[in-house]
Structure formats: C-alpha cells, structure tokens
Length: 114
Image (cartoon, rainbow, N blue to C red):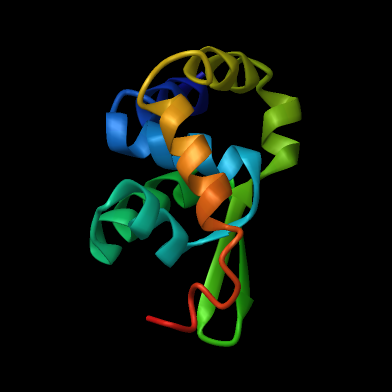
C-alpha cells in the first residue's frame, strides 16, 4: 500500500510528471530531458532519483551518458500508472513535451555536442 501511495506522489509534482511522461515513450538521456524541458541537470537528476528509489525507472549507462526509461515490470504490476500516463498525454504541456522530444531525438550526436 505504501508503495502505491509513493508512486502516486511522484506524479504530484508537474516537473517530475513531465519527466516520467517523456521516459514512458522512449529511452532518453538526462541531457535530452534537460533540453526539452529547459531545466537543469541537477533538477532532472533529483526527480529521476526519486523515481529510481521506487524502482520505477530503468537506467542504462553508455560511456558518459545515462539513459532512462520506465520499468516495464512496474507498469505491469501497477496498471494505474499507464492510466495516469494516458491521461497526461491528452493535456498540455505533456502533448507539447512529447512533440518537442520527438523532434529533438532526430538530431544526431545531440549529447556529444554538450
């Protein structure tokens, strides 16, 4: 029960909800999130750490970069997360964030330019 409440609390912060929404659609790097949401690396990391603590995200290291995605096992275990994400997809700024991320991901070498 406590885990369910903590997961719901993750979505109570708009920035964190926007980050979780973005990583629910594709695997992205910290710098991708920074650029799309126009927030600092430390802010992104702080929010991701809270989700990581609940095992809600997967983390994959590749050289200097870390890539994040939602943990599919947790999505199966807690189906309400998918319902939250579906609702977020219908509203701004989430729709615009996804559009921006899809455009941003088309840029080759995006992290290497930093």
